[in-house]
Image (cartoon, rainbow, N blue to C red; front, top):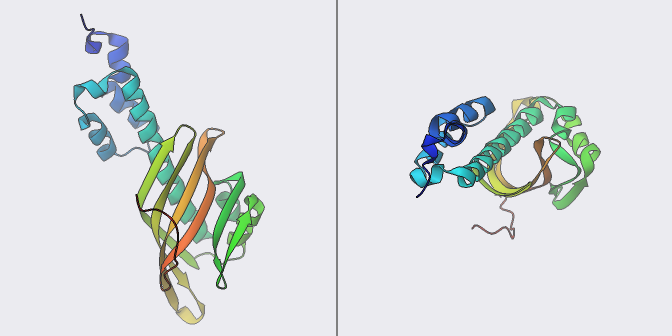
Amino acid sequence: MTRDPSNDDHTASKFGPDGLRRKFLRVGAVSSAAIASLLAGRGSAALEGDDLANQFRELKAREEIKELRAQYCWYATRADAKSYAELFTSDCVFEYKVDGKRQLFKGRDAISAIVAAITPGTVTPIIGNHTIVVNGNAASGTCAARNTIRGEGGTSVTVTGFYEDKFRYEHGRWRFSARRWFTYSPEYEENEIPLD
């Protein structure tokens, strides 16, 4: 005879739809659309035990990584070098093109110096089109970005492209362990990043 988890008060409160909603609301970062998609996902069988717990952990990780990317944009725009650097692991790398050549910046100090050198409001990145693959305490993915860069005399230029990211969960939060920027326009950069 198969046990009905809804009859088990502990299981129902921990893994049932109402208990799951409460857990998501406590997390605070997970959208109602994400909750609805999880609950509607694979029917009632998906709302049992370890399978649901794994789905919850993955969805929570994905939402926290999206929040990390959003914080990256806010701190870059405000030129908050200290907060910006905290988004990266201590052994992180950041790669992008400078004066026509790709450059690699290693460690928080080097990455912090990038933002410390700009005036607040000079760079305004906006991101979207997230792809995220979670594998335990590591994750990877891409996101598209549009950067508006304000120049002298009120002129500005818009640069579009994408980031290829690697993440690591450490000390209770997700951080970037590697970030690479490739442009789409005004110059298209060839890259080897797969589309699947």
